[in-house]
Length: 485
Ligand code: C2O
Ligand code: CU
Ligand code: CU
Image 1 (tube, protein in one colour):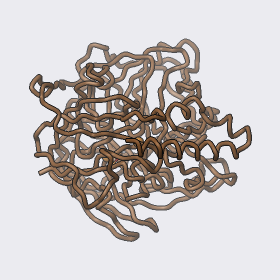
Image 2 (cartoon, rainbow, N blue to C red):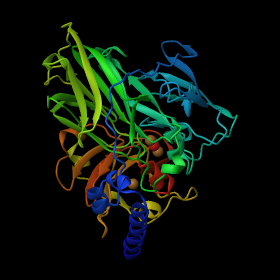
Image 3 (spheres, rainbow, N blue to C red):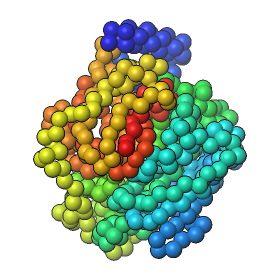
Image 4 (tube, helix red, strand yellow):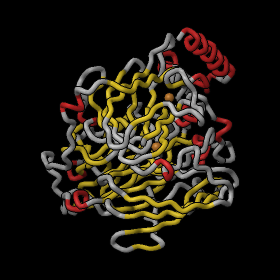
């Protein structure tokens, strides 16, 4: 404990030193209140100027498909993207220049994916939020070298959800995601197909991938230049890879599937007219019923699905805003079409529960998240690929207690993620979780000093990672492994 606190002070002094070398303009860009409180040096995000119409990733065409099985090819590759008018930016992408397509699968299907590494460096293909056997989960052990390929197979057993995929190679996850390797994976099921909610992709069911990037003067992504051990933050917001995004829509109900695909930045979103909207899903699928709210937080790697009723907007523009008042996305409204889906607040979306038996179970696994910078640890340890930290039986629910340790410098938020499972939050600091955390989760973001109890069940076997989803913390070894058998 003492060692960590001392290290924290030393690194913080280093941070302040670096800061004071900058011009006073640089100083303005740093969020001092949060830096002093919590070590984080978060680059100020510029508002979207609303110049470019948002585009949506393509839905990936299957190689083959029948009603029980589907197969795809996913290729990690280098590309050139025109993010800024007339300028070529070097990027990475899946089956394209930048980011990835949406992979759509149905519950019950047997999925075959042919993975190809066309990069000049090692990579892996991780399915974030998917309950699949450890050997196809794409963690740091499953490296594909440049030019290598592999075919994996799994059956989708979980319910409808908005998941995603990204690389996971040791020490390189942050870098590769930053350059553009990230895509969405949608699971559909009977429930999601019959629910009376917007579900026309690209029309009223819209993916919103939030990422902050930083560019060199010649508009190249430069991860090394901005690399920060406590998480790389950029000044430029991209949504679905589009800079200065705006969205033009019919005046009706829309569903936004928001993924925070940023390396470390947190967002807390609201509309500029302060209107209410409905959260219908979290990481692992639908909540039991819609949660009406005016703002919503999304930590790195989390997904939230919300329904916004745009018929309620008075003017012609409504804008999605971040908590610090940055413009995230101006939405321009066309004429009213009034074919609005109902989505009554009371509508049953799911039937999740946690039994009292599970709630009363003793804590059998304790996770202590601590440190900052290079000193981040879980239970005082750094990741060791040859060490199994925990074991758990397949299909057995255990209660894990996750604590974000406060240190003398305050500490910082850590979004804690577990592979191969969707867990349920039993309590936070001894209290029932708020409604936005009442559904299935694969990531829980804790503030310094917060402690959560979660019910964790693995439905498949294998070795799985658990880690902080600040990608630079993960790369710095804030990660452990659990073996499920
Ligand atoms: Cu997004 Cu190890 O995961
Ligand atoms: Cu994951
Ligand atoms: Cu962390």
